[in-house]
Image 1: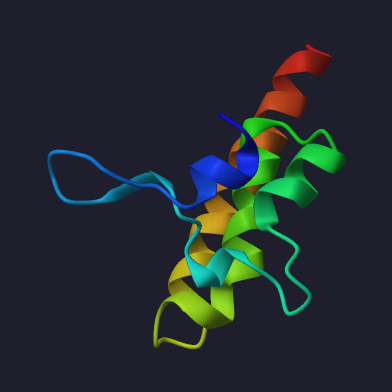
Image 2 (image 1 turned 30 degrees about the vertical axis):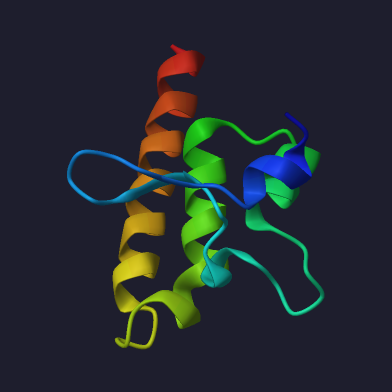
Length: 89
């Protein structure tokens, strides 16, 4: 299945949450670039990719001015910093 094909499928888990398929609008930029494409192009780790994703969607997902997503991004960045510190030891 090509990427174009799977983007149109909606995959829902048992808790009725989105787990894949159609990309939610808050992950797509003004020119159609998807957050996941940015993350892959920069070859980011899980935590840096997650932080990036939260930042990119911050103003669009919740009605809190981005606070929830920014808070989550900060937590992922803190974890990434801990990993870096642990690797130095």
